[in-house]
Structure formats: structure tokens, C-alpha cells
Image (cartoon, rainbow, N blue to C red; front, side):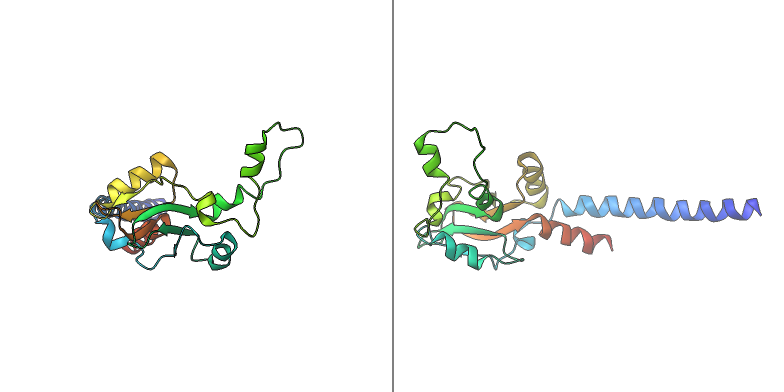
Length: 172
């Protein structure tokens, strides 16, 4: 009976080892995939003068970030739901801040996207591959990367969930 159990474990281990090798090969392949194939081309675009509360109402469970563009579709800035949260954190009880700092952290109905957007977001080029994008995401901790060309025109948005979706497809 022990021999039978050992044989089953041996076969299972062999299957797992071959599965790991296959997955390793697929992951190497994933890093060569062009960003433009995986990026989301249907993303939320807003203008700098968009009222902040309009942007908040446009966010959904799918849309967690917005690319701020000009009339020509060129990148001006970027904003995520997480960026918005910084403006809803109550000040510490005994924190010392100048008037300029307090003014920065107050929101009103007149607050616009340009007031709180990230003006120089970390981006990826439309001609780069996922290996470069993954490295950039890991090094910077960013989960969203606007995809731009040399003229800074926005072509799409690459998110961690897009990469994970591809890994899930390739590994199944």
C-alpha cells in the first residue's frame, strides 16, 4: 500500500513540476507582449476644468482613475480614487500647518480636477512591452499607467488588473 501512495505522490509531483515549467514559459512570454494589446482603450477622460464632484460621480467600480487631457488628447495629468482620499482625511488634532497647506486640503463645489490632479504622472509608451510596464509598476508602486506616444497623446490606460487578466488567461 505504501508503494501505491508513493507512486501517486510521484505522479502528482511530476504533473506539478511540468505545470510550473509551462507557467514559467508563459510568464516569460507575457513580458514580451506589447502594452497596446493589453491596455484599456475605453477609459475615463476628463478636462482640467471639470468640477471635482462631477468626476467623483463618473467614477464607478470599473473606472477607478481618470486621465486629464487637453483638446488634442494630450496628457496633462492623472487622478485616481486614492488621490481623492487624501482630501477627505481629517487633519490631526495637534498638527501644525500653515494657511497655504490648510487651503490645499480643503474642497468645495468650486474645486476642479486641475486643483488636485497629478501633473507629472508616471507613464508608459505605447510601443513598450509588458515587461517594462511591470517593472515600472513594481518599482514605483503605481497600479495605473497612462499609455502615451512621443507627442504625449493618450492611447489607453494600463492597470494591474489588465495584466492579471492576461496572466489568468495564459495560465489556464
